Length: 218
Image (cartoon, rainbow, N blue to C red):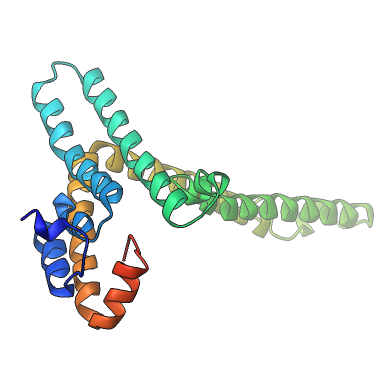
């Protein structure tokens, strides 16, 4: 067993089997010589049992929340480590909100733009009504009344902004609450996907990418 993890030629089939069946334990990483990444994979898998144990034994919700926060710290730290030391990105790019959990809020920008466009349309329509009144047209001749196109766009933008914000908050709550399940599922899924990728490569390509080139992921 120890000889399997010693330096030397690596089998594509062995690495694929370890990834598919024991990928949750990070054994395929240790087999390929990526001990630090294998440790991160084990930590990701361990998040699930730790959170489950805290939920079963904790007497108050405060302790569970602390464990969930700690679990997310482990996950984010592992992500930053892999991105920084295996893909060459700068730390500023890694911790950028668009690369972590804040990217869904970018959707709000478009609904805000719709809201602002509706407000601008209402201002233009109001200016046009005032101009018509100054020209001697009666109040009843105003087109649209209060239910104008600008009002519709403004209300639609506000409603969509609130709906998207509520959906994002609900999504974050779901992710935060089920971090244990998600960590285990992600750990197993990563192993299976990597195993399938290993099998799809030729022996020469596998040797070049993962043994000589020491590619850590996928």
